[in-house]
Length: 126
Image (cartoon, rainbow, N blue to C red; front, side, top):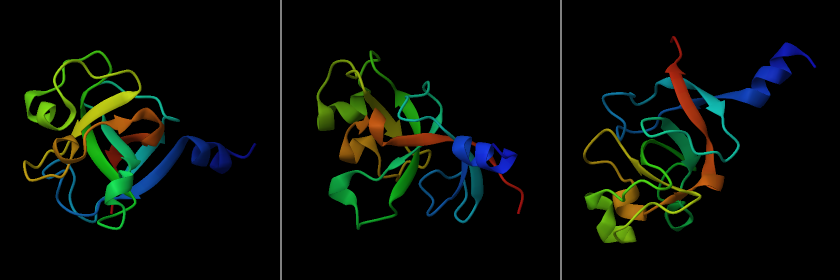
């Protein structure tokens, strides 16, 4: 297999739209992301995932947010009003934007593992 095809199977490039991940990510900035095939990375990872179905059309098809709670972790208090208190169930993750005004799990609840496309690894040079 040629090297470019192998890299394309493992990595993709995203372009940040908006300021929900500010100051970590800037609007228009391009990032290299590693494909994870539906696996949930550890808390702190920058997840690239499909925009929740009930919000498609209200924004880009994919979002980038920080994983803040993974299966077995306690549900953060500010998300509990949306999903209920307790622990994050298997196959789900709680995400939050770095910008306090971000639309994230506080608004749309859990993100299912099968909606996760990958993890943003690093910004690309302009």
